[in-house]
Length: 294
Image 1: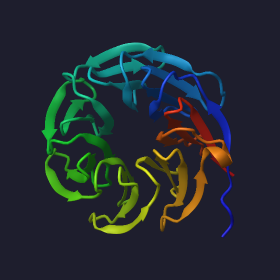
Image 2: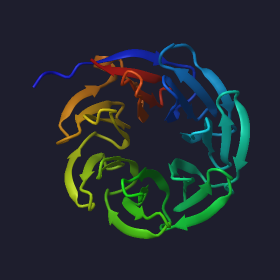
Image 3: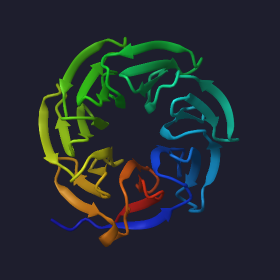
Image 4: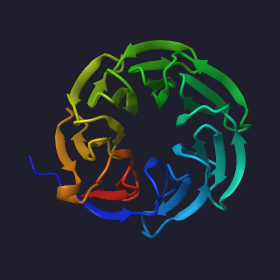
């Protein structure tokens, strides 16, 4: 088997604190946010210092861009702010009564917002009105994944994955990890999960376990699948990004500071852009690294 060649082609800097959230934009654009409250727009085609499009009072852990070009920003303890990225104007605000916001996902015509205390707030995207509150646990909601059959998989800090149908009913719950589930991704009818227990798990369509590996030394914060479906990237508290074969979870590359000029602190978030298939990683070291498989 040939050696997988990956090159760090750039580093974007400018944030004043750890970077916790990434979101893909149109074409070569993407967005980042973190503890400094800055929401920054970057262009992979024209690397520069980035452009601050909003400054939020408090940390930001979640970003999501809708089809109208509005970036939903999860302002910790304050709620959701909508920023029109074209002109950087604030167009709406949804208060959440002091709850933390860890994840935002669009499910059909609604936005699912994950909080601490096990609460999910479901919001109508068009009207910005709250449709429903869902509470299936007392533990934090950490991540969402929309499945092929319009069900939603939700990862919690108690290690459970809970499956909800389109009418917001809980249809299945199972212990997936020993503690927090930090990221969920699907490929067809299959589901992949990572968590605080440093394991990567691959689930059948019926949610029985297909494969699992110990992926990192410490907690795995994020997992992303490449646009062509061949590769999985994982980001960890152990300061590394690892690249795996999607089929079989075979480790193909470890991206670290000493050998590849990687991150010097915990890696928190990833996006795999369709623009030139570039992988972006965000870290506690305040930097964004841009990677390309050659």
